[in-house]
Structures are given as structure tokens and as C-alpha cells.
Image: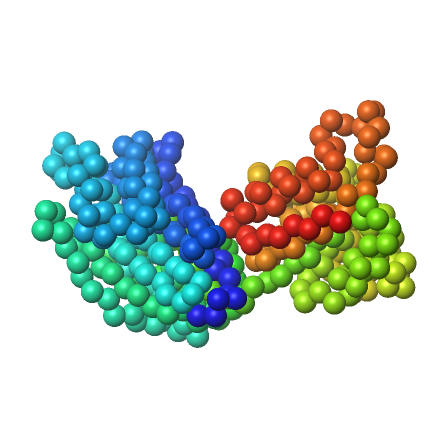
Length: 391
């Protein structure tokens, strides 16, 4: 796999009907210094709080062992020893699927008692031969290990048995939706939308499984995690005028030559680009909102917005979720950020006197601080690759 590829990872869950917490745990972590991403999905025995504790313990231990490259037998035995024993079934139990992928080329998948993962290449099911591993100490535990060298547009899908067993016992799905049912749905979805994001695909799979349940009431926790290997989608965010006006031309040249999508945040910044590149900026009235200033259009630029108010609202949505059925400038920018993989921020450091007015709301953070909050959240929560340049 080309080291320039990006790994888009996303997940979605629905908890068992009537429970207050998830019995499944999904956890992903990027290790930038090793160019690795580790994703783990664990299903705890039963449901509710007890299952949540089991799956959370399993996930956290597995992540630590994977980070430290601990021997698989040692890791699996330690996890089994640490998990509490179920008093009814007399077993310590939590399933797991672990995907450990490196940008240099190889991906390893470790599975114990979850449904087998789905691997899609060229929009077709691709069967990867693996090997079975068992610990002498816990002979009833079988771990399947697979390895693959990834190519652009590959997808890996892991799930809990809440997906494959969805609808079990009803007339149409007496044995549940099944892995084959999920595979057919994934292939059909990819045929309709070949570049669908991992989060959206995960959500569609979980909702399709939920549709199989009577009254859409989940009989078990339903969880899915997807990984999508693709050429990176790049985005340039330019916000704020440079401290030195001599840098105006340099910023304009960057905008005109950037290989990716471009967003300009801030009226003064837009004026600089407009002047330097001799293009016209016009208000987009379709983005009207009583709280957020309207977006604008500019030749060669994908989105032009106001600065601080818009960025502050984007940060809120990245934390809480994007506002539905809205076409505001901040919604558009938030969607662009989530749809992109490598995001380059260019932040001007010239002070805008308007933002020092004490009569303005307290949440109007100065540009540098709000951008810092946004890129930290994009890195930690969404695993985006971020670069920031102050001018």
C-alpha cells in the first residue's frame, strides 16, 4: 500500500432496547509516530452495565497490548485471566475484533467469537486466508488471525453479532439477517455510492440490521466499525490576514495552486484573495441564517465564510453533531472538514480590532484559539491528519 494513502475509520452503534448503556465497546486510536491505526470492537457477555464493563476492559487491554506489540498468546491469556467469571455460565467472556493497520502496507486482523470480518476489494467480496490460534490455557478460545496488504479503495468491516443475528426468530429471518445478508447489503450500498465514508457505511449497516428487528427494537447491542483505504482528500482552510501584508501575495498563490478543496474563513481574508487573484466574491443567499453570516462564492474556491462566528459554530457541531436540514455556512464548512482526510490550516496572526470589543459575546474566541480547538478535535475524535501554519 502506498504510504500516501489515508485510512478513514468510522463506527456506529445502537444499544439493546431497554438498556441504559452499550454492552459493546468500539475504540480506535491513531499512533502517528508509527503510522498505525488500531481499531477494536468488543462485545461483552449479556447486555447493559455488566456487558459494558466486560467489553470496556477487553478493549482497553487489547489496545494497550497492540500498542506495545505484545505476543498474541500472552495478550489473550492476560485478558482472559483479568475478566471476571460469569456466575451463571462460569466463563469469563468478551468477544473482540482487532484491526491493526500500518500505512506502510500490512493490516492484521485478530478475531475471537465475533462474526468474521468482511473484506471488500474492487467492490467485490475478497476472501483472505487466515490461521486459527488457541491458547493452551484457554483451549475453548479460538482466535483467527489474518493479514493483507491493502490497496486503494479496500474496505474492512467488523461487527458484533447484533448485526448478523438481527431479526432472529421472526418469520422472515428465523436464523437472523446473517453475515451473507450483511455482505449483500454492503455490496449494493457500494454500488450506489462507491466513495461512501466509513461512518456513513457503518450507520447504514446498523440501521439496516435494526430494520430486521420487530418494531425496530434491538434485541441486542448492534455495532459496526468500517475502515476505508483511499487516496487522501485534501482541504485548505485559510483564515485571517497575515501579520505582514507582504505575505498577502504568498497566501493568494497558495490558494491558486492548492491541490484540493479550499475554504476561506473571514471577510478580510476573502478580500485579500479577491484583490490578489482578481476574482469576484458574491454572497450566496441560499445560506441565509439569523445567527450565522451567509456564505459567499468565489471562482477557484469551494467555500467562503465569515470568520470567528462561523468557526465557533463549526467547533460546536464537531463536538455535538452537525445540524440537520441546514445549509448555513458553518454546516457546509463542518461537512467539508469531516469529508476531508488531510487538512491544512493557514492562520493569519494579524489582530482584528473588532474581536477585542468587550461588548461582543464571551464565546467569540480569538482566531488562533478557536482554530487550535478545532484541529485538536479533528485529530483526537476524527483521526484527521492536520497541519497548521501561522503567518
